[in-house]
Image 1 (cartoon, one colour):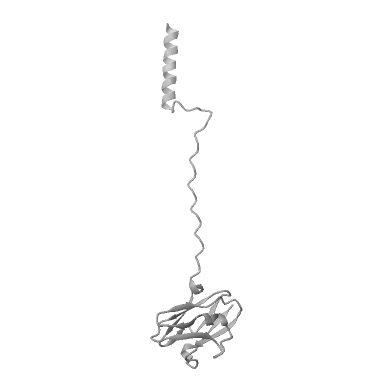
Image 2 (cartoon, one colour; image 1 turned 135 degrees about the vertical axis):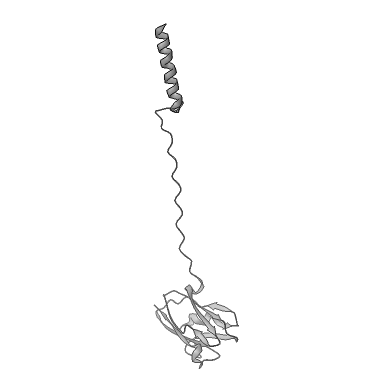
Length: 145
């Protein structure tokens, strides 16, 4: 009888320990490790802004900047903030043959903007207002590197 009490006490002790330690888990199969938090996706490269981030603003005082340097393949946006119309073109006047990509800008009404074609050839491009070719405030250069 004493053996039954000892065995019964041992069984209760083992049962108590099993419940306290998590009980019903199988010690040979470990619990699954938590999934790692997903890595944030890399930020996408910024998209180029129209004109490759290069803008020439035209005001009643003239073009600004009048000289700029851009990377090969860039585009240049001309913004007309002047009170009158402008017609931006490549030098020389009137043939406009130095940088034909600039001729895509063309006629701009007040508040309007347009972007040149891709400036792919390394060179210096002069520009002017076709309707005011001798107005030096509306002339400038774009260096393509």
